[in-house]
Image (tube, rainbow, N blue to C red):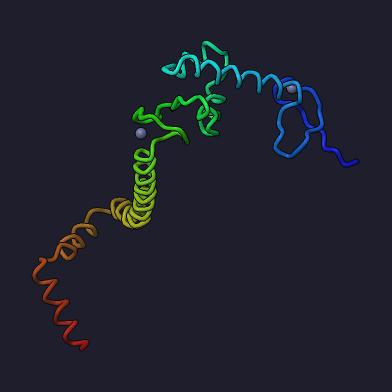
Length: 170
Ligand SMILES: [Zn+2]
Ligand SMILES: [Zn+2]
């Protein structure tokens, strides 16, 4: 018999699960089922109940109630149970955020990732020039002073030069 033993995360007892998805020992499964039944009954009796009240009244955990909502356990009661979006408080039945906030978050994350990438590129581009300026200040101001006027060429001149070169290339 290749029975895999598991440790019940709720009571710590070792048990043999009936299938791969069974996490709790049979006793705790029974207790959980009873608790879930209690929660469903409570919602049926109090259709306007808030999750916070439900937790207080039944002793169920918020995670458990959220899981039950996701699993559609309250559908049979005819009560539409929802929990608030963690960002805007809109009623949702799945995940942590409403579709709107989830979409916005996705955009934010993409934008943040892009910013990080841009900053990294900028830093990489800045690093050699900052090394150079450190070296020129160490070596003396004369070198830096002669270098700066050539660097700030008038834009029109630089543009003409470029176009000339371009024409020459063609
Ligand atoms: Zn147990
Ligand atoms: Zn939201």
